[in-house]
Image 1 (cartoon, rainbow, N blue to C red):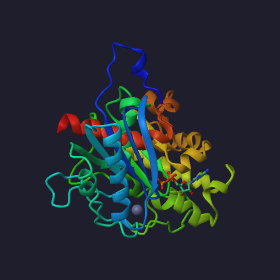
Image 2: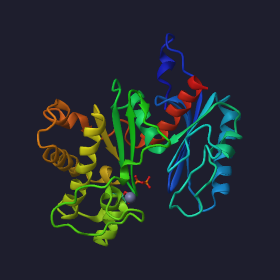
Image 3: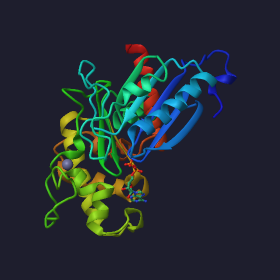
Image 4: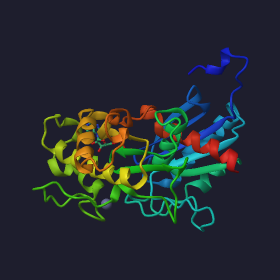
Amino acid sequence: MLAAWADSPMKAPGPLLGGVELGGTKCVCLVGTGPEDILARTSLPTGADPAVTLERIAAVLRDWNRDHGPIAALGICSFGPLDLIRTSATYGCITSTPKPGWGRVDVVGPLSRACAVPVGFDTDVNGAALAEGRWGAAIGCGSYAYVTVGTGIGVGLVVGGRPVQGFSHPELGHIRIVRRAGDSWKGACSFHGDCVEGLASGVAIERRTGRRAADLKPDDPVWELVAHALGQLLHTLVLATAPQRILLGGGVMNGQAHLFERLRRELQQSLNHYIDAPEVGAQIAACVRPPGLGDLAGPLGALAVAADALTTG
Ligand code: ADP
Ligand code: ZN
C-alpha cells in the first residue's frame, strides 16, 4: 500500500511497528506504521510444533528489521487463553488452549528475542478491538466490543478505552445462556457443553448439522439457533457494559451476512424494551455491525498493541 502521508509534507509517519497475529490455523505478520502504510505482510501456517512456528516468525521479524527497520516496537496478539499479567512467572504464555501442542507455550519470549524493543502482548480479540477503536468502526467510542464468531467465539471488551482485565482477560464466548425453547442439543464446548461457543461457533454448527458451515443456505434452520445464542451473548454485553458498538467478525459472520439482522432482532426481543437507548433501538444497525477493518482487524490489532507498548513501555 502507498503511504498516505507521502503526499503531505505536514504529516510525518509514526514509528515503525512490527505485528504478529497468532491464529489457530495461520499467523499473520506485518510491518508498518498503520493501516495506510503497511511495508510488508506475510502469512505462515500455525504448525503442530510451536518452536518451529515461532522460529519461522522470528526469522521474518529479523529480516524485516534488517530490510525496513529499525522496528521500534512489536505487538503480539494470540489465540488464548493467555497469561497477560506482567508480574506473573508465566507472562507471555498461552495457557489452557485445546489446540494440541500449544498449551503452556511461551510466545513472547522467543519473538521478543528477534528484536530487542518494547513488546505488547494481548488476545487476538482485544487487539482487533483496539485496532477498530483506533482506525475502524469504533473510533471515538470509549466502550465497545469486538466479537469473533469463527472456529470458536471470542470477545474483546473495551471499557473506558482499555481492554477489560482482572486476574486474566474475560472469556465471554463461554457464558451460559437461556436456551431456545425446544432445543436441547448438548452443545460442542468440551468444558461447558452448551455455552455460547458450544452452540454458535463454526465447530458447533458443523457438529450439529454434520455439514460444512459454508455450505449451509441462509434458510437452514440452524441459523435461527445460532442467532438466538449470539443474541443472548449480546444481551449480556449490553447489560454488563452498555457498549457503544458491538462489532461482529470471524468466518461465520463474514460468510452469513443474514445473521446480522437476525441477531439484532434476537437482542431486541431478549431485552424486551428494558433498555431505552438508540444503540439498541432506532440506531441498532449502526451499532451492532461488521468491523470497519474487515479481515485486517486482527493483524492491525497487533500493530495497535505495538503502538501501545511504545507509549506504556
Ligand atoms: P479462526 O476462528 O480459526 O481464526 P475464522 O474466523 O476464519 O478462523 O473462522 C473459521 C470458521 O468459519 C470455520 O468454523 C468455518 O466453518 C466457518 N466459516 C467459514 N466460511 C463460512 C461461511 N461462508 N459461512 C459460515 N461459516 C463459515
Ligand atoms: Zn464453553
